[in-house]
Structures are given as C-alpha cells and as structure tokens.
Length: 147
View 1 (cartoon, rainbow, N blue to C red):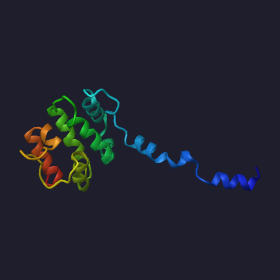
View 2: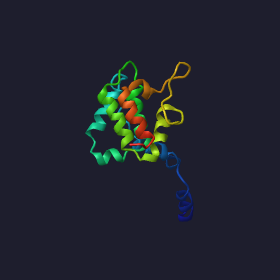
View 3: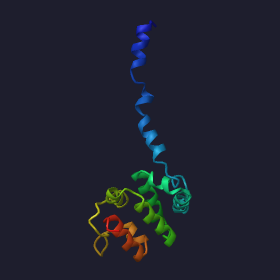
C-alpha cells in the first residue's frame, strides 16, 4: 500500500467510530439501578444520590435524574418511603428550574400541565401514586417554579 492509499483509507471513518455515541451516552447517563434485582433498584438510586455532594447533584443530566426517579417511584412490588420521596423532591429541586417540566415529562411520559394527572378514567402519575400528599404539594410548587 502506498502512502497516499494509506492516507485515503485512514481518513475515512472506521465502523467503530460511527457507533461510539451510544456508548458514550451510556457512560454519561450511568444509572446505578440498572442491573439490580427489581427489589433493589430504588435502594441503589437513593443510596447513590445520598452519597453525592450538592455540587455533584446539580451536575446530573435530565436523563440521569429521570432514570433515578423512575427507579424510585415506578419499582415493582415496592412502596415509596418518605425518605425516598424526599430524594425525588431533591432531584427536581437541584435541576434547573426551566428543565423541571421536561424532567416530569421524561418520568411520566406526558407534558406537565400544572398539576398531577390522576382520576377514575386516567392512568395516575407514578409520582402521584408514590409520594405523600405533603410531598406532592411541595413538588407541585417546585415544578411550577412557585417556591
């Protein structure tokens, strides 16, 4: 192979280079709950968030926050404790205020309209089902940026 042939072949993207973005996103959006037994998912998310410094909590991406909140409120055969509810509130509180409705949508799968979705003829929000009433009231104000 001549030098010019080598330059042409090395300047094109290799197949491995084309598929690095999903791998990088998986590293960036690491979720400690993934790979856990279903009954440990919420505990892993709460434990990791509790071990973070306040500055680290603010650096979580929206996807990281949404995945952790889902692990806490949408777990199989579990009850959300008051302490776990406080972690959910802290994840919203430490998010940028303008990102909070988007975070809600990532968790629940529908847009935030100023209040929780609940009722006899709709599927209730997982957050609504999980948190205590006083926590829901505080969190509603946080998402609506009324705190």
